[in-house]
Length: 399
Image (tube, rainbow, N blue to C red; front, side, top):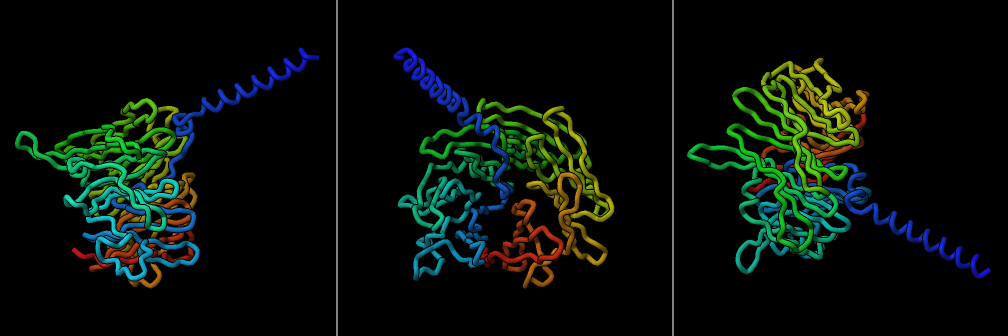
């Protein structure tokens, strides 16, 4: 009888050990490999993020403040709870500096890169604060050199506990101007350690896009030279800290705009014959992980395409007719039409003529910054055939 009890206890102990070992086997690196791309606002100049309940963003202009909109009530305002605050100085809880970059969410905290007043002038760092605008905290200092290196096409995003900063900058080498593309990363802790992921130079113009998913960071570089356009696609492995070149395409007449990552590969949106004023084509490619090949998934040449982007499960396009009316199209990755409608925003007359920057989105809705005279409007457009877009908030641009 004692022997049976001993064997029973031993079995229980073995089961506990097996469960413990199994849990240890799914550490951070393994968990990252199964995590799909989640930041639908990981685009240059986006400065926007969302929770289940609200949208958050940074206003335009030289002095920047955090704005919000509650999704259910549609109430918007400055992220500041001070009752008598006029939201026009550095004492406002919503103030985030004069050159805030990125705006990301992790847990119950908002993060950005920017400057704040201090006793010694301006303190440039990674900052965080709560979803109510309180509990502001300096995470770590950011050097002026890094901000200068990433001043153009700047992208800031968070993947798990790591923030990455990407962008382009100008410099002079041996008397000749050149551009560089830079990607760096750091943990969201108090250490001063930064990881140099990518540092590439070119005599021509360079643009970039970056997306993180499944334990990897994917970097698209677009070089414009006298010979044409070159496309490079890189992969950074977070667990192994290794950078590898997946793809190079040279002498292209096509303009790669951005990327989106799925489990099967990297989608690349392309505006073909982009130097033409008319007869441009919209194309969607996929770099397939299993084969290492670049395959065309869609091509549209029946309209004059002005703009293309790929985001979460949708390929987005804008066309313009002879009367200069703009139509918004959305196709899923199987080529089915999700949305086809006029580019129209409620209470904004002739919004299709406004300047616009894509902020991000998914299959349900997409977001733009629209610019007209001294105003900027952050708008949400549902991806259906009927509903007009809505203004989330507007700013006066003070230069």
